[in-house]
Amino acid sequence: MKDLKSKITLVTGDITKEESDAIVNAANSTLLGGGGVDGAIHRAAGPELLAECAGLGGCIPGEAKTTSAYKLPAKFVIHTVGPIWRGGSYNEEGTLANAYRNSLAEAVRVGAKTVAFPAISTGVYRFPADLAADIAVRTIILFLKQHNEIEEVRLVCFSNESTEHHRKALEKHLSL
Image 1 (tube, rainbow, N blue to C red):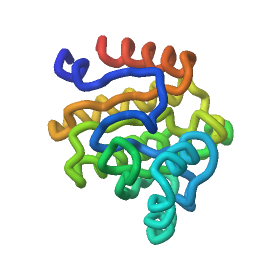
Image 2 (spheres, one colour):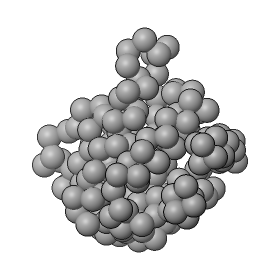
Image 3 (cartoon, rainbow, N blue to C red):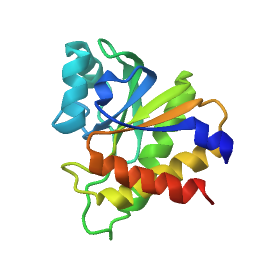
């Protein structure tokens, strides 16, 4: 587990400032920008990102698509659509795990060695933050166990509360 611990970093901050090969955008299914992380990434990247996204034909929840990062301090933006929380009876947990897994698979596909993630679906999509952090950390660890290509996954939390949920999930899953 020591090697895995060195590959996962937890930070509180602004994902649009992260210098990494790829940053993950918690997008909506149109990929045409929105609020929260999605809007911030589109604003920071500039209008070229919207133009490229317009040609992608959207994205279904749990899937991921990659674009250039334009004015962001990254090479790529991996857009993924997390689930809207509807009480847990609509495979929201599986869809969220797929969003993380497919984003990491996209990172491998484009050759990204470092990836920064926001807390997908925990804003306007209302996914319970503690459960989302647990799913994120568990899915990332399982992926990294099978893929050595990724050197670092940065969990970029916008709030101290989100950081604490992720810290607890990391302690839980990395102490197994």
